[in-house]
Image 1 (tube, rainbow, N blue to C red):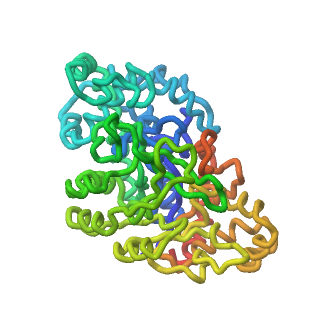
Image 2 (spheres, helix red, strand yellow):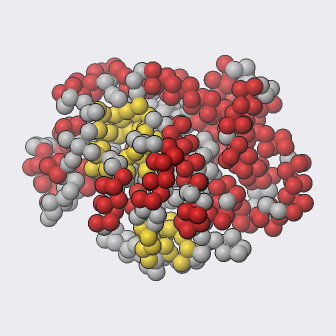
Image 3 (cartoon, rainbow, N blue to C red):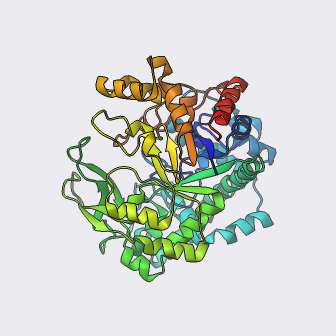
Length: 486
């Protein structure tokens, strides 16, 4: 297959109520993809975000984000009236997460009060009980006892034991039911949207983060699967070592998997996670793939990442088990950053597609593996990812020597040509797939950047404006797609 697609998070869709959702604007984007001759829609993780609003730090590795539940679709189901939610209309500016947190659940609780369970709902509960019950109780406790992360809860709730825990569950069934209802709404809307995309010939590429958040129902409900002490505090946490960009390294703070125990259980948690991912996506991109070969462990509670060490991960044994259970899967491995021969070997053993990011290619001192003349078919080419600035901003910020190099390499005679030339270089690549961030097709600058790694706050806020997806743009993308036989 030789194809192309667009990277756009669900949160970045246009919607009157402050954040992208799974309603008509999502369907319109799928129509735009089809009109533009695209085969793929790549999204970011769909999980319920927590403090910092990052889709890579969520309350569950399995749950969907209630922010994405579309109000108009709930109205069509008879669960909302216009007056229940139209007051939340906020134009089409960037996402205000504080506003969403304060008011969106007020609207969703009104829908819950009108909801009456039926057989479809009961089937959803049965099919997802492995993770859904724990997640619903976890979120119910957070709602009525907002003391912060679960390690600050009362002992009975923290350790999930004793009469206090069972009494909480018994006396808060309504609150638990609310969080279960939200998951039903999310997945009902998502499954219908995905079916529409697939009927239009669009393949959805999902994103599977390597780590999970410590403050998640996954860790709270299965603490034995992570490296925790007797009080359930982390023994070590995730991050990356010091490099040219950070003298102290990056301290991410995620708990580390106890792979010995996971292996003894046949990697059942990972198998369930991949099974779930391929239920909701067609293809999956694995974030931080190198962590499966070796992960960087930082003693807890170190203040920087300087004292960490590389520890061997499960390697090919995990992926062999997944293949035994689920068969061969269409997976893209994020093989970026510092890679050893062992990481390259693991990627080759799995047969997964790698990634080539053009913004990493043009160091005038180097013959980078990301330069187009080094590309391979079994990879996905990007001008940049969600962690990079849009091409327009990237080109402007380049050092003069690097700007000259990329200009000479791609034949750029002026900055106004940079975005088009880089996008066309990705489309022309020998890589089987090319994925272009929506911001680059719109030729937007620094204000449209999604995320700046190692920063907290101000990220994940950009979204489409009304009128961005016009027929002329779809026609242009379609023409470029045909030129490069995508």
